[in-house]
Length: 127
Image (tube, rainbow, N blue to C red; front, side, top):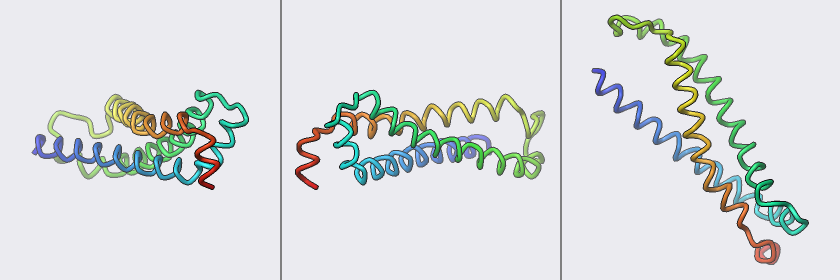
């Protein structure tokens, strides 16, 4: 049962990272004009990466907060399946939040780098 739960946990983590990457890539593609204008006006690539990662961080924080609330609620039901473990172990919750934070920023990094490398002339000619 633990192996099956671990497999589905890893599968959920992969799906979350793919979904966050997709949402971020879509957000960057919708704001290409704005990002192109920012770069044309002299925005540094680090600033563009920060802009995108700030948006990603909001999604991550909201997701971690909602997940923590729901998992604290669901922990009382899972307590019967755990033998010798505490269902509301703070170290587990903090570790899971940190893992989601790292995976979330890794998923948002590639679209952020692509946004920072946009050629403003090409972007502005497309619009």
